[in-house]
Length: 365
Image (cartoon, rainbow, N blue to C red; front, side, top):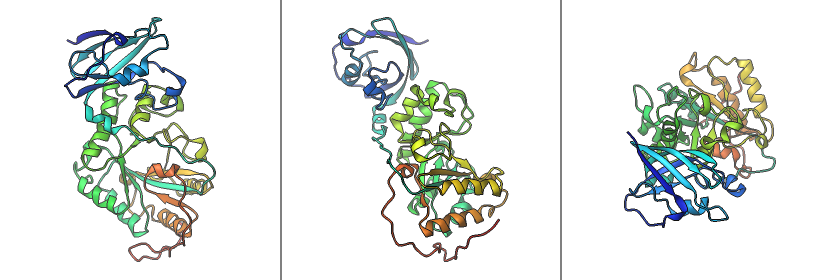
């Protein structure tokens, strides 16, 4: 049985609470156009309940929600366990549903920094990505290293070390060799998660990455998510769920934008990808690669190593990428933030030899 609370927000004096736990609220009104263009959920839709009296809000939340005429806003919610659900009612009677999940106040340190994508024309940049940390990644990562290539590894935090999956220690070793390590939810469930579950998977996932020494602000959406959390259109990001991503992630690798568009046509909060495993034909992979090499393109290329028919199935493609990188025609990065960053100054092209000493030659599959 939940406990109900009602407060008229702007008529209560502010005082600091001793309990460091707080509710992170999602939902609520878009107070002003300036705040809508900012960090959404945190800057205008987040209320922080401090202390244990059932309704005191911090000063920042009150200032963010104060209407010009100073009228009171009404917050009514019910607490059941670590979840609070209710609504914020404006003076004109407009009602906005809210949901809050209790986190330690340290969660505030997970707020993503401001991220401004580069503008203007840029050389092509590509990123290889490995999802889910299966044991088959070990061999593929060695193949990348032998060619001087890097990749981003998307980590479901609760699956690390299970069965034959990569361990946290191994992820640390690969990070030291230039691989990017980013968050891919906690459990990677097949789910259309309710609000509490979604917040826990995103905020909880970032918290667990940091706890293991892999702090990141990059989120990779599981392809198993459905319904309102399957972000396959920009409109789905214009919700409190999208605002949640804007709050904690600089880049969200979802499905909202097509994977082969120019960089100016996509957003860091919804960049898609192409998949070159899962039965993709050589001809299809070559089509992807042809587009990825065009100026001002930023392309994420996904490999599910568990679904490759043979370990050497993509050696020919990795050779193409390594040759293009050696010739300076494509920049290869290991973190999706770098897809939207300016290219570094040109440097002298290295010999096309991986650190294993193997000479790389283009191959025809």
